[in-house]
Amino acid sequence: MKFKNYCKKNKNKFLISNYYDLVKKYDLDGLYIPSFNRKKIYSLGKYKHEFLKIGSAHNIKEMRIKESQGVKIIFLSPIFKSKNSNKPLGLYGYNLLANQTTLPTLALGGIKAENKKLLKLINCKGFAGISYFEKSKQNEF
Image 1: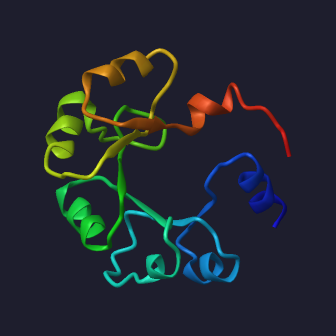
Image 2 (image 1 turned 90 degrees about the horizontal axis):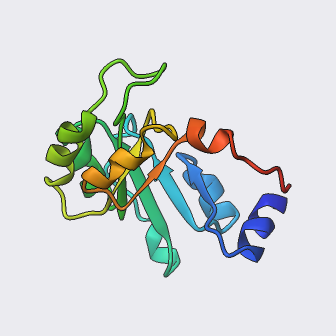
């Protein structure tokens, strides 16, 4: 609840990954649906006007599943090589995949300060990266 209140105070959305019961129980702002979750029925958004569902995908099949789940934004990953990904999409692969949907896409995976400027070459609305933000994180909690 402390984190939820912090997010609300700072006008940030608070989403939980894959735990629908917690989203409803704590009246959270949204749900993140990972690529491995292929369940197709989600009615959580009906109880709240500004409810946000986002998901991640690695290929066209997973992207179509996310669309059928009603997500509003799709993370496409991994875009660059990292220690956790052996088969990155690359810039060209990312654009090929992003152009197959009308939903906004965000780049994820292997993003570092050195390759961040390459994101201007792809069709993404934003990016996320643990390693990228970890180096500049501020502990405000």
